[in-house]
Length: 264
Image (cartoon, rainbow, N blue to C red; front, side, top):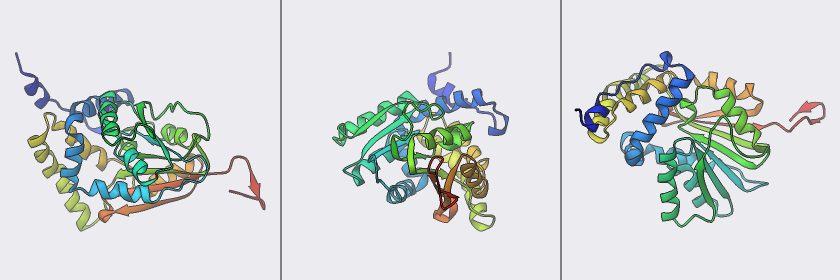
């Protein structure tokens, strides 16, 4: 009988282009449940700690002006939620994720930082967010939208729960513009990353999926168009670290109101 380790090493996932929606959701749950214990460590090592800087930039761009509430969608182990709470002491933070193992790890981190009074992490689905309309000033999803098959539904839900002129932010791994950096990054993603992952995780196939999902993510222009299509305004993209990560920001239009004949 094969050991559990052997079973994990033999895992293979189909290409992102070959998965149906239900299959992809199940695979994503399986992947993140399997790497929870080393998720934070691997993020730091495999990104050269750039993930810390990317989240820091995201938090810097946040603007709280009405509810002083932030919703972190696909919060994982709560890194972005905790960064927000530590930088904005008057803001209450909620994080939701559909992988309970990740949520449990995040709750431990919240307690370790003595932030239970302002940070709540719990199970939640990005496409069916369990909050009333206009509940938050800011919502964000970091390294999560790439794994959601119905991106329009997730963005629509995120827009629904923020106030008028509230921010919707997406931090995501992307590919640089064609040229030297794209070629270098592609070599790292497809050649180096999976080999490194074998040293640190029982499920290296998870990082083959990671590379595949990044290479198949929409271009910046395409994703900005997607954000605009759900009714966000002032959408912009901020490439980070030569474009291997991108911060997208849009604002919720004022509901059914016009000023000087122009929609705001």
